[in-house]
Image 1: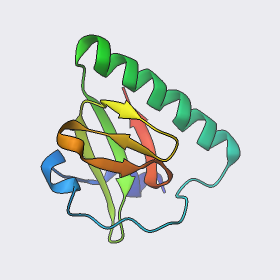
Image 2: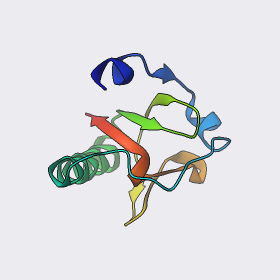
Image 3: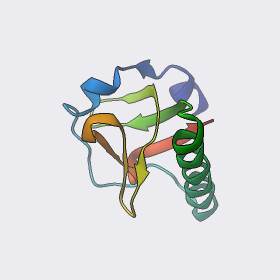
Length: 97
């Protein structure tokens, strides 16, 4: 799995809106899900306070991808980027602050 994440293709945040996201969770453990939630909360604070960018590694219906952007909002089910672009939380592998 680690190699899959390291080789994630970089996409522009504007292109995320065109991607398709399956309904399955990408993380395998409850602990990993908790860590992702904590990292998303930190990234949201960074984005709102300092407009700091975060690297988000996620998986759409085709492959693992990454985007470097500011997280503007976090709901129970998705993160919100600029221009209302969203990524479902259950498709996020990792958040690098």
